[in-house]
Every structure is written in C-alpha cells, then in structure tokens.
Amino acid sequence: MSKNSISRRNALKYIGLSVAATSALHANWGEAPKKSATNKKILIVGGGSSAIIILSTLLKSMQNPDITIIAPNEVHLYQPGQLYVATGVFDKDEITKDNADYIPKSVHWIKEKVEKFLPEQNAVITDNAKKVSYDYLIVATGTQYRFNYIEGLTQDDIGTNNLASVYINDTDKGTADGGPLTWKWLNEIKEASKERKQTVLFVKASGMLKCGATAQKIMYMSADYLKKSGFGANYIYSTTSSRLFGSKIVSGALEKAQTKYDTIKNLYKHNIIAIDVKNKIATYEHKYQIKEGWDPDFKEWESIEDKRDIIKVKYDFLHLVPPMSAPDALVNSTLCKKEGMFKDWLDVDEETLQHTQYENIFGIGDVCGTPLGKTIPSAQHQAKIVLKNLQSVISKKELQAKFDGHSVCPIKVGFGEVVMVEFNYAGLNPSISYLDASKPSWLWWIYDVYAAKPLYWNAILPARI
Ligand SMILES: Cc1cc2nc3c(=O)[nH]c(=O)nc-3n(C[C@H](O)[C@H](O)[C@H](O)COP(=O)(O)OP(=O)(O)OC[C@H]3O[C@@H](n4cnc5c(N)ncnc54)[C@H](O)[C@@H]3O)c2cc1C
Image (tube, rainbow, N blue to C red):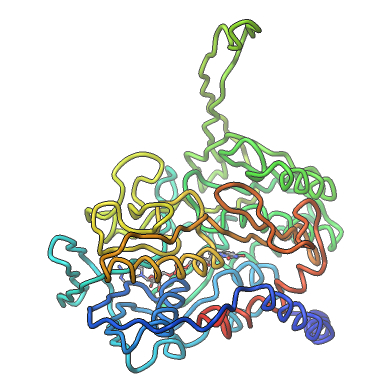
C-alpha cells in the first residue's frame, strides 16, 4: 500500500466511522430476544462468514445450546477485502483474523472437514474418519471453484501466462493469493502498456457465483488504475447475462461509468468454454435467437430460431471469475440438487432455507441453491431466518420465517466511487433514502473501504447487528 493511501485513510477514518455508526443505526437491533432452551445436538459445518454468524446468533438466542462446529480453518478470511488487496488499497495481512476469537470454548470445535454427509443416519464422517451425529444440521460450507469446467484450464494456470483471478483463496487455510497475484497482474499490464495498447478480457463464468459483480468491480478498478497511470486498453467484458446487472437502473449506472474508460466492449450472452493458455485465446459460446415476423393479432413472432456461434478472441491479459458449485462432499451426497439451474448446490427452500427432503437440515450462505444470497449481508439476514425456523422445527411448529433474498452489493466503478445496490428477490430494495443505485457515491467508497471491515469483525460476525 502506498504512503498516500495510508494518510488518506487516516484522514477519512473518522468520516468512515460516522458512516458505520449511521449504518448501525439503520440496522435492526430490536429487543433482546428471549433465550429458548433445547437439549438437542446442533451441528454447524463450515467456519466462514455464514457459519460464524449463525453460531453467534444461536449462542445469543438459546440457553446453553449443545453446538458442535466442524471447520478446518483456524484463520478467518474477510473475502471482500481480496478485491482491495488486488488493487493496492489493502495489505494482505489486513483481511484475516483468528477464528478462535469467534468460537467460544463452550462450543465443541472439530478442526476437520466433513467428507461424507449421511442424512439418513443424522451423521457426518470427517476426513479423519470421525463419525459425528446430530439432531439438527446447519450446512455453511461455502463454494468450491471449478476452473476445470473451462476446457484447457486448471486453477494452477492462474498467476501464469497473464491469467489472474482475484477469487483465488483457500478458505480451509484462511489464505488468499488472488489479491497479491491480481495486483502483480495489474502492474504487468501497466508495464506492457508502455510498449503497445493491450487487449484485456474480464470474464464472468456462467452459473451461480458468489458476489458475481466482482467481475465488473475488478474491471473498473483496473481500468481506473491504468487511466491514472496514463494508459488505456481494449477492455472486453463477457457475461452470460443480457445486461450488466439484473436491475435496469443499476445497468444504466454501470453503462455510464464505462464511458469514463478507454473502450470497454460488452459481450452479452457469452459463455467462456475454453482458454488456450499458451496462445492466449479465449473461446466463447454465444447463444441468441433470431426472431422474425411479429404478428400483432396473436402477439407473437412467426419464427424464432435458436442460434449458437463459437467466437475466439486473442488477448494479452485475462481476468476470470471462475465457475462455482457446492464443495465435493456435498455434491457427492444426496443433499444437493441433481438437475436444473441449482444443480450441485444445496437443495433448500429459497424462503425457509430448510432442506427440501430433510426437515432437520438447514442451509446458510453461499452453499445454498437459491436465486440470490451469496453475499455477507445475505448470510446476516439468513441467520435470523434459520434461527426462527430451527426453533419452530424443534418445537414442532409450522415454519414462519421467510428469507426475501436480501443482498447488498457495493459495486466499485473506480477509485473513490461505489454504486451501492440493495436488492432482494423482488428487485431493488433500498432500506435507506440516500441509497441511490442509479449513481456512484464517494460516501459509499468511504464506507466500503474504511467501515465495512471493522463492522464485519466487530458487529456482523458476533451477530451484534
Ligand atoms: C473476491 C471476492 C469479493 C467479494 N466481495 C464481496 C462484497 O463486496 N460484499 C459481500 O457481501 N460479499 C462479497 N464476497 C462474498 C462473501 O465473501 C461470501 O458471500 C461469504 O464469505 C460467504 O460466506 P460462507 O460462510 O457461506 O462461505 P465461506 O466464507 O467461503 O466459508 C466456507 C467455510 O466452509 C468450510 N468448508 C468447506 N467445505 C467444508 C467441509 N466439507 N467440511 C467442513 N468445512 C468446510 C471452509 O473451510 C470455510 O471455512 C466476495 C467474495 C470474494 C471471493
């Protein structure tokens, strides 16, 4: 990190804290809930954001609960910080803490991984061959990256041959190489730009992705970094979607932001299917329809033809947000969906978060096969839903609590500018009046850089808000 950014950080610290305070005011502190009692065995699998938030929530809401957590990671990673490491704003040591700070001694912590889920026996088997039984199971294992779904690519290629991915991390170990390697990659583009203008691809893979807008965040921050260094590039952004963001308002804001940078070309409905690592060629599948002859009486097209083109693009540098799924142990169990758009994700009801086949199993966080819910604010909201519905199942009552898909996405469109988007299954859902998703704001940059991380460590993980 540069000295400038440190001094700027200090100068803005107090403003950041005041924004944090404002944010906390808007959070639903509510009345202290009455503690419910149960002697049932609750097992949480996972040790990331969702696992720790639900653990803290249960501990605050239940009298002496019997909780076991199976999580391999002694180190807790603040993953949103990886983007700021990749762009020189944070140092890599700033985004980790000890998980022991959040797992009290009263909780039985097994520092292993679940290898097999045996829902018919209400048990799991760890990678150390330990059988652990439960009455109620909460699955919070996050995602597994699937670089090898793209022909010609393995995870080991990232960091070589001008390939980067800010996503690279090992949540079992609490390490995140994606930040430093992408920062190095960005500076290599800068060096290469001194010779000639580079072609830089920013690829968003298909399927469900955690914080999918990161594919654009890293593009805008890279373009801004190069612009500030006096360079431009031919940027190409590819997505399987038909616009930049689900909401048209947000898409409009992002399209406008793109005009600030040297030629960003958007390839919509383009799915990366292969990368020729050595020759630097990306292959996309472009699916689209040709519609002809609109019939105003029947209000339909006379013919719709499905088209599929294969497009090859030669590049100098490529950043990839990889395909993802639930981790292997789940994919190989009966707990994941086996087909459809949520194939290989935990099969839970998108509102109650209860497993669709096993009433004593709930999901939380990135692992869930739900249309939205792969951000930290989602996990925060889901924890309240899982708590209430778990209490209902324990007391044999009908499930009442419903997750509405709540998610928040701070889209960095450059240094000092964030479009803050709050949304749910129904669309944009700003909870506070000054949250205008149609334009970027420096205030949200200050919040995101200076306040979001302390808020995460001190209020979100311990379930204080
Ligand atoms: C680059 C990047 C940028 C992001 N930006 C943002 C952002 O700006 N805002 C935002 O809100 N979110 C952002 N996110 C997403 C956010 O970090 C995740 O939504 C959040 O961490 C989800 O938490 P989780 O607990 O579900 O998964 P994780 O935090 O990934 O934790 C999964 C845990 O499960 C453990 N585990 C896995 N398999 C097993 C097993 N078989 N047995 C036992 N344990 C297991 C892992 O070791 C890990 O501890 C970003 C993520 C990345 C990578």
